[in-house]
Length: 109
Image 1 (cartoon, rainbow, N blue to C red):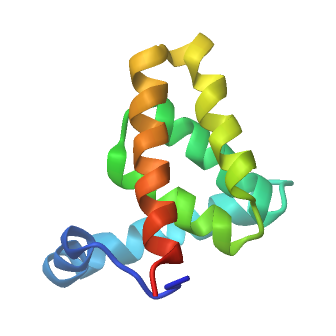
Image 2: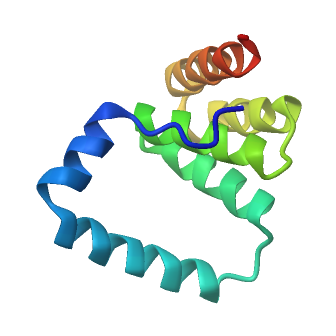
């Protein structure tokens, strides 16, 4: 797994708006410190929210991070499947596609 992967658009954001990135990072740390969940559960929750928002980049990022924090592909897929009845079939299928693409990239040499 490439723990240092950063999408190009995110790198551009960091370079163009460092003060905004720093403030967003501080907010994210504050929120993370207040939540009672372990890192694995936190990432699965964030994955579920990203799926519901149909936010492809956030889905991909949270899949990578969930895997890094010990979630299994079966657990990650289960989050997407749960979206069928809440967010709709097309949303869940799109998320499953993004999940599989990230998983394929993780297993590539």
